[in-house]
Image 1 (tube, helix red, strand yellow):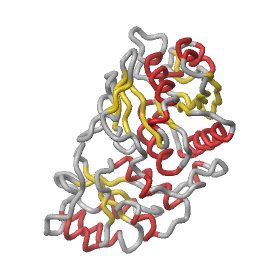
Image 2 (tube, helix red, strand yellow):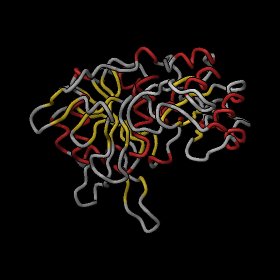
Image 3 (cartoon, one colour):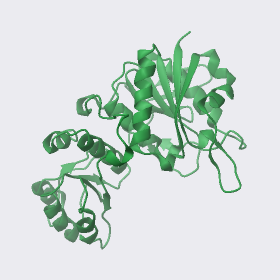
Length: 328
């Protein structure tokens, strides 16, 4: 029987109710024991690296998870499942995909409802993740396993605050869907980020959370000026500007970007849910003008994932040119 290693980080799937609000309390072993059917598919081993809510994750915990993934593979695991809170599942999956090069499937999952809540999706999601972890069609690379679907780490986005089908891949769709008996592939499950991945060791378990690069996000929208960008530059190692449409900003923000790129790398993403950034328009905040200023474009990466990549690349000590090239 194949071996699957479960790496627990906390989240709703591990939470219990309390008078002052639900919080992670269950260990990974308890999650596995609560879903006996997973043992029909694999021999399960468990490591806990954190007990955080999804909204409380930091890169130090992600690095600890990455280290546990590598250790599990070295110990002969055929697949790895990482459990955590849904708020940042997409961030963690993407970080593992671009900075944790292992030859087995890595599945990140969690739940929208606790085990004790009616209609909990925790058992089904854990089972889906284990089934995918023993399917070598999904190796290498990280995926999000949720609601009987598999989504590539690069594309997965949490789209709804509490719906069970919250994870979607806008503009692309799931890699696979699961029924009781079969797994249906819809598109190539190969690692989508290999050409723009970061070097091994980028997620260093010996690094404290405070040691990661400081990369704020600046949002463009109606009436936004450049004052916020000017303020956050003090102490920032890089900036992600979430533009509108194809990756445009207001004129005043675009003018502030022109000054910002002299100091730090600036990556421009879009607040749209699907589609790439592209330099089309002129004027002070248009994409062509921003490109001429020297920004890097996020392509079709979400704002959150563009920030993950910029944080990790800068923290790894890569040159500005190398980091910016990973967005091409």
